[in-house]
Image 1: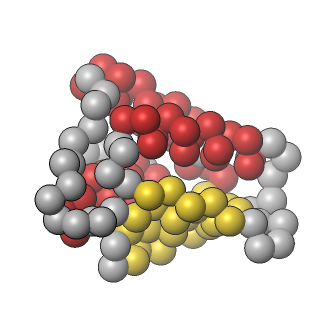
Image 2 (image 1 turned 135 degrees about the horizontal axis):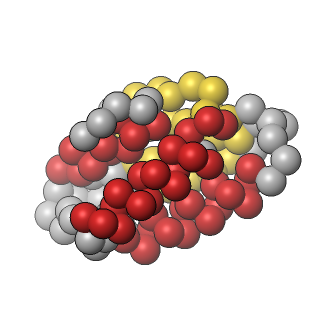
Length: 106
């Protein structure tokens, strides 16, 4: 991705608050580790029934409002990993994801 990619979330402030709340209630409790990457984050999850469907739904929702980010879900064994990556000028959005996952307020 180039640095000229438009960087903005299409959610309204109310929708963003609701999404964060949903993510904190459903996905965040399943995260085992958060790893910062030069161009994003890696979220590692432990095994959990129904988790893959939940994360796939999250990816679809996020790709709709943050199309400048790339979401890659992998399952090398029983555990899931989600890469969230973007161009350099999306660092502030990726930081928002990290803070949301780690339970810190914006």
